[in-house]
Image (cartoon, rainbow, N blue to C red; front, top):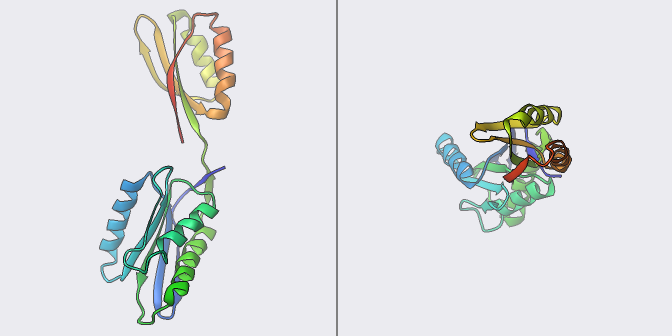
Length: 199
């Protein structure tokens, strides 16, 4: 089961006079991650590097920001993958201390900074939600609303026209049971419309 983070977590390492300031936080995607990197660069104008990694569905990314290729972003991304995280960004701001660490030292530093930040992070399970929509005659609106409430689904939208259209969301694992109950109690008068799935 994939996890996200309840709130940002930080950790700072000092290795041979270089400071590595790590942050792990939940982000929606690449645009939000790049905005966060720009913010970090503005907050740390004297930093040598602001490296980052992102795991957000099809939008994973790894950026070394001037460090030797593959020594920062990719190792950070592997830490996120190993922790089964999704919708999470790791960033490390590095202040260079004057002593070169070598490729192996950099990989260890960036990996450790992110791993240590994750130790204090509160992980929350990502529950895949599905959105369902149906239309019913006015006489069945109350019944459908009660079933939605009993299932603890979230009512998203109700439209009144020639029929009542209701759109609601619930965990994907519970959708089939609710659909079966509603179809049965709708006595052939309930029509399912297209819905969608999201995390």
